[in-house]
Length: 640
Image (cartoon, rainbow, N blue to C red; front, side, top):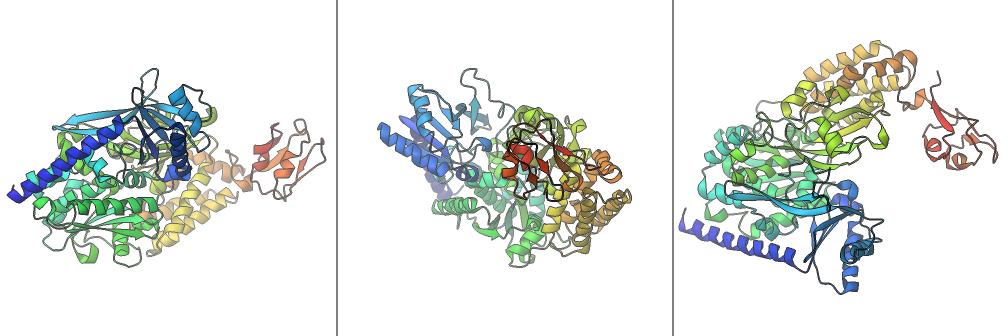
């Protein structure tokens, strides 16, 4: 270590100590409050909640340190507010609006009754220790019992450890939880080759969906003797219902930046691109803030930490094309070309952006990197399974009681995620299927609930890990309609460059539409498989190659539903509009006229206090009449 490097790192160490003292002082203040200000919180009204918190503080004459934090994962409870006062527990409240801020203040400070808001649990900062360093996160426990709340009981937060804990717009908060320590270790104690070897030894596999070894990928780019080289972060995240990368960028942007700088040092790149979809304005804004802060501290730019290593970052906004999640299409977009893939080889490590060596990893892959260097490869390998070390981050959505963002150790089962963390299926209904891996993933029925969640086990079961989407379906879901939804998405998002994907996806959608309309034949099932083979073998990129997966997996596990649509002309789940009718049950109808008033198609007739009638020719089968009827007098039937 040179004299200059020692001086620079000493200054950073002093800044980190100061940041830790400041962070601890904030939480030791008379009153410390955090408000969840991620996209989910803001959409639920967190801005108004924050203003109401300040008004209530003023009304009570209280001085408080208020921090804006990212999402802690419990999206269904947003807006969320945490309060900690000296001598009292740190309590997290959910569903806090501007209207019930007074209520939670009375509950916290005056032991008042809690009605509209929800007490999520007691928030306890926790610490993992390894390799002489620490990883901090927040745990939530039941205030009385002290046990972890069900949503968090089986989670293990690593990538999400800082989300909800620190202010994402404060580099000092990030330094206070040992931020940029991994970069300091890499630049002052390790050669690029040693960094690559440590990441390789950790077993980190890319979290963008492919599961390829991150260390091996970096090693290939390192060996390519051509310059300049580029680091690229894929933050496109176009899967329906997926918000993992967005939450990391909004809640902990510095971890991704630190990971990219470390990877750039390892590979020999001096410029990186963070490709983020433009629909994530908050993530983009916080990225720009974090980049400016890192540059101001000398952690980006020329001669980082006096090491002689230069690195810069550029945020590139994508236009929202799902295909740009594929690395070559993404690189075309960065270069100002249409977002379409190109054939491989050569692979990006040899020829990527502007035909130069490029490395593409997902947001989560980069966010793991500083933790691995700080805590050690052995620590990371001790988590998860032998073939899939570490954790998996999922957006748990669909028909499940507790939706949200979760991080679990690899090897946990689907049953544990859906029932222990997610709370099971709402309204006492039965589980039917779970779609993992987004619109290009696979659908697994109840027999697979005990499948371990890791790259290899899911692939063996006919599904994929993907980038982290997980959609749960209950007994009322029509699996034919379910697969048609994903194929419609592929048709809309296909870039159109190669015929197998462009034409094959449209033909497959047409077949599915015939089946849901009651016009399908048994030959259509073989036709779907034939089209799928052509798409899998002939498509240029993963979008077309994997597009048939949801359809093939639903046929494999739910062929009886396809047969019912085709042979009997019925939809067992009673969801396909062409195969259902709504009728009034005379003995239950009271003639209250509520259904008629809510029917936009004017298909319901009848006098007050008389039995009503639904005209099947006018009925649009929206189902609203059945929803608003208080007497269960409207039944869904099959016309046949």
